[in-house]
Image 1 (cartoon, helix red, strand yellow):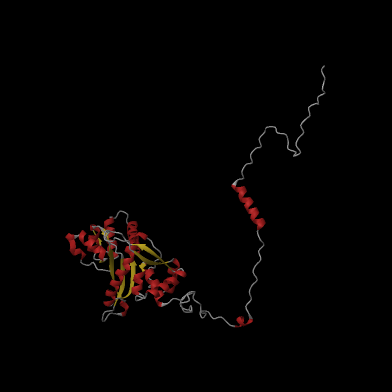
Image 2: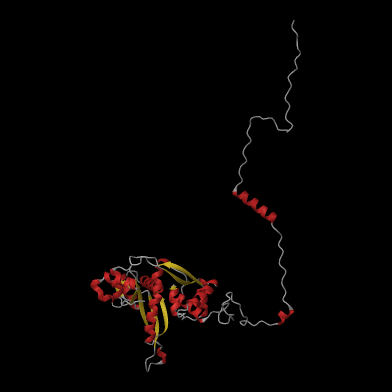
Length: 351
């Protein structure tokens, strides 16, 4: 016998209570990234929203006793930041007072662009290195001087790298030195390094100058001025340009020879020889010389020779009549390169 069992009707599945729409197999389109302009606008809006209101500080009123005391310009004492330095009265320099040694230090750096610290120690501070160190620290803090250590040339004779400390003026130091007015009007003042690779050579110019200055002053020369090769080259180029502009068809060799004669520079092998530095100075008046004739002047050209000079360059410098200087390590190398013309190196002096 067969029994019929009643079956329930299938139920429909209800949607989940999270109210999500039925899936229709369509992907949601990606959101386009914001452009840099939109990002900037959103950043500015957020910054403006979070900006705190500005509240100015209340002005501090001076006391009645302080207002009653009149202020006299130039008499207010200034406490130095360095506890080892005495209190200063800024009378001679606007905003800053300098001692004689500090003024001399700035002057030498301005005239020669770069000087070794050990040379400053010997010529200005008489070997008192502690005093020089204190002054350099003070001038560095004021932003007037910069110092750095450089490596000397490494050749076969130097088995170890030798380092020296050099000093230069900053632009602020140059401006202060010019405002002081202690230098002659025709003295150019330099600041910063132009050719870092030639620091060793350029720093020796000051040593050569000191040797020549002693000889010039011993012969009665005064009011020494210095012109470095930068300034002399500029004068030569300016004079050549003016001559060519006046007569473009004129021979260049003739122009150079005329310019060399005018500027009292030697003309060797068709080239104007320019020294590393020229020392201009005043000579004492001769007996019976009229006051209206002015003072007599002279000059001396100095050249610092290094082992990098080739034989042809050495002959040109020697024939130019410059006062040539070379270090002890370079002198032997230079002499061996011109054995056949050893008489040309008679004027080499040890700086």
